[in-house]
Each structure stands twice: as C-alpha cells, then as structure tokens.
Length: 175
Image (cartoon, rainbow, N blue to C red; front, side, top):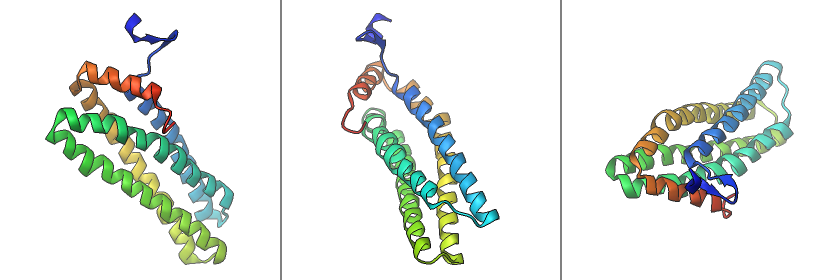
C-alpha cells in the first residue's frame, strides 16, 4: 500500500480516472440531448450553449480524455497484448474517436451555417450531428467501461498498470 503513495496522496488509477471522466462526459451528453429537444420541440436554440458544448467536446472529451486514452492506455494495450488488442483499439476505439471528431466538427460548422441562414436544412444538420455525437458517445462509453477497461485491467501486467498510473499523474502535456 505504501508503494502506491506519492507525496502523501494515493497514486492515480488510470482506468478509474477514465471511468470518472466518463461520468462527466455522460452528464454533458445528457445536457446536449436536452438542448436538442428544446431546439426540436420549441424551435429555440441558444447558440452560445451549443458552442460551449462543442468547446467541452474538443477541450475535455477529445484533447484530454481521448488523447490520453490513445497515448497511454491504448498504446500499452497494443504493445503488450498483441493482435486482439490491436484490433479492439485500431478498428474499434480509434475509429470511434475519429468519428466523434467528425461529428464535433460538423456540429460546429452547422452552428455557423445556422447563424448565416437559420433554415430547416441547417437545423437538421445541427440536430443530426449533435445527436449522432450523443449516440456514438453513449455506446462508446459503455463499450469502454464494460469491455475495454476490464480487459486492460485483467490482461495488462501489474508493472504496466503501475507505469501507466505514474504516467497519468505526470502527464502535463495533455492535461
């Protein structure tokens, strides 16, 4: 237990940290869905709230969470666990991260288009991309929490998990 302490505090657990971040992301996804329902049902949109959602997606979900998963956990899984992990990561999680980036960019563009021309086509683009992102993330988070993270926890060596925990604590480049 004492080996898991650093400067008087418990060492981070990378998988637990990512799962806690998923809770924050899930809450933001529910807020995004509510914004979409208001726009759909009441024909009212608060562009600033949607822009804040895109900003959160880019700064926290992608830049902090997804990039740390890719740089730390997924890289270790591919290096240590072989073909199964490579397939899960490259053809699963990384594809979904890229699709999430696509939805976020398309949502941002749709918001700009709406400002220039608040018509049915641009409304549809906002709703389609926001809800596409929402449904992708709901499924993605579930897959990571139920499949990817448990697989990593039971399959990666304790040495690798401890190294990842230290790297997470020391990762100031992305944080």
